[in-house]
Image 1: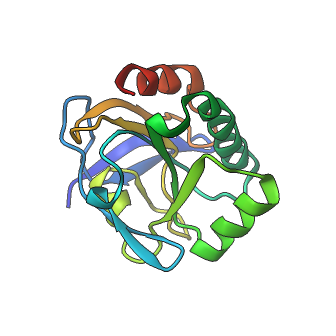
Image 2: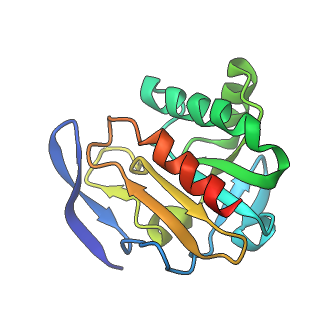
Image 3: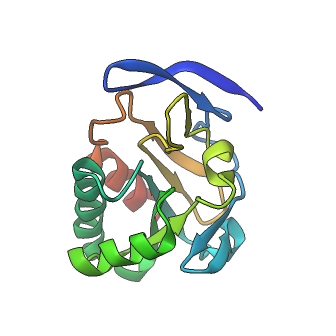
Length: 172
């Protein structure tokens, strides 16, 4: 498995990401995550513009903000897009978070079972006492091609919401 040393920082400390660095133009890697207790693969997502917002844990302030900001920004796009928050949180915790915070547009995907999303998209953080995914955003068009990628350089910082939403609108 490919490893990228010092690809991001976490609280200022360089961290290794496991998996390839995805770039615009790449075919979106397949994955198998959980939505509730149901397995979901890339092929199970609708063939339309998709946004994958990757967060370390919904139970942290920045991840919560990221999910809610994207949820708010997606309201105008309606059914023309499909949007997902991906984390290693258990599906039960993801559901509880979305219910408590009124998140409606973002669906949650849990990579807790086998980290296939994390290693496929190159966002699995190595060297922490607990497995986490690095904060990142991927936009995939209806053909399954990645059109936008942001690996947030400092995991504790927020992504560029405007750039990600513009990229999503461009392929919607």
